[in-house]
Image (cartoon, rainbow, N blue to C red; front, side):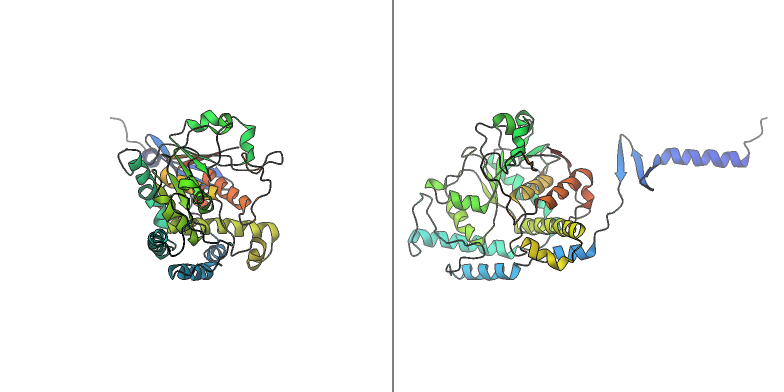
Length: 380
């Protein structure tokens, strides 16, 4: 009869067996260790919970123009259109046929009732609620799928291409790659005609700011369909008075006009401001109180492209980003002669966000820890 294994050897075998069952591997990275657990058939990376700068979070949560915006909304709800607002906007409401509506006309009265209702509902919902990212499928994807005759579900789109308007798009022929995505999102009604090889031809819905809608509202029939009258539009409201354009145009559009939820607007504003503050401190070494004077705090805002990307993050399993970036040899927009950037945006801060989205999405602040980020890629 053979003797049993020595106690020490038995203990070692037990340890090896336990490690094999848990399949836990420690990988050294940058002086520390990351933990990877093997769960058949895939590897699940357990990232360390990010630590955000509490001071930056506090400053990013402050909306410098909030009091003034609330006052403007109160004035509009009372029917006082005399104020031109923060952005120099003058009210010239038109009917869906493009005819200027007099303030006392029956047509304007009907538009006014709709305007007052949607503005009131929108303003009541304007607050910080990070869980909004999980609601975007129902708020945006649902109405679009219903319009297209599809079964509405909680499933995300398999792949989405967000196509920006940067002139760098003319340096690559990404058209076929863009059109190969399940969903293609374009910004601010940028033209595709004559640029098909670079930007593609497919458009599932467009994402615009309400300044674009205001221009559409001045046209016959509120024409705002460069991609076809059946293509839905998602709109974020820059100015509360633009709800007049929305109420007029919404009655004449066959495809849905979907206004972004104000909770989503607030979330995007906080995220971008955090990155802008962080970049400001790192580059200038100046106190945060001086950030407002550099970026005109009350006017500071995220770009249309940023919010379109964040929308795709909420409704897509894979997000591909095209036409975001700049080059000394490229125009600001591929389809216009605009050369200068708008100072109310901090594009460099937004590029930092896209970098984190691709490489370390958990580093993006203000989003709940339970939210599932998609895979993302930026094409330059």
